[in-house]
Amino acid sequence: AQSVSQHNHHVILSEAASLELGCNYSYGGTVNLFWYVQYPGQHLQLLLKYFSGDPLVKGIKGFEAEFIKSKFSFNLRKPSVQWSDTAEYFCAVNSGGYQKVTFGTGTKLQVIP
Amino acid sequence: EAQVTQNPRYLITVTGKKLTVTCSQNMNHEYMSWYRQDPGLGLRQIYYSMNVEVTDKGDVPEGYKVSRKEKRNFPLILESPSPNQTSLYFCASSLWTGGDEKLFFGSGTQLSVL
Image 1 (tube, helix red, strand yellow):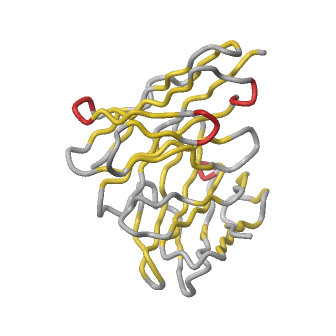
Image 2: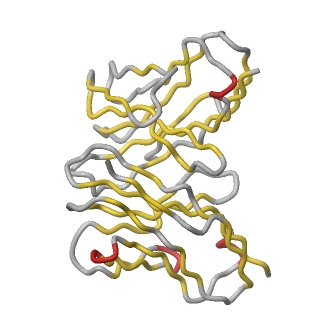
Image 3: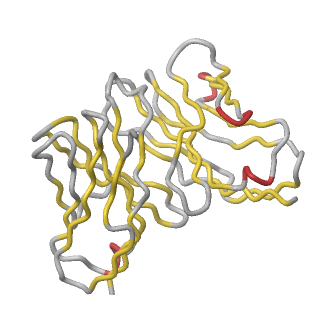
């Protein structure tokens, strides 16, 4: 069965600091990978996704993620965070052809002005 | 506007009183799914549906029922709610083309079972 691990549960950064959130999955076959963001009081929305091609994917609001197959990782990065990035971030995986989407436990990011 | 609509937004009920949370999407999506979100546990899938009359269990289906009689609707039914079902619930839908399509989420239903 597929699973997703997000090791950082709560991250606090100052504005302009760089961000990297870890995501590891367990599945040996073809995977589709996603990062979703949930701003306070709102529903989840897609930040970026990877399903094939260039392992470095760029998403909205300056976020990017790199798929490293050998490490089963899909870490989220942003070079300079803003206060408005305060939110909870979820990594998700769907193994190709398998109809379940599995989410990680989430990372709460707090950006201090 | 493309959207997933959940109702109600907030619900307080008592143990054992049957309830239904509705979910509707206007994007002609095949795939619909229910999740519950709990602190420290992230989102866990309850049930999902690949199309009309096709449903399957997710990771935490106990105590829940679903139906998919029409493509646009996917209600979540709690026949006999218990306090451990107090949670934030999200419905989601997707145009399933092999799993690489994003999920569209509803605004959530905060359920409290007393």
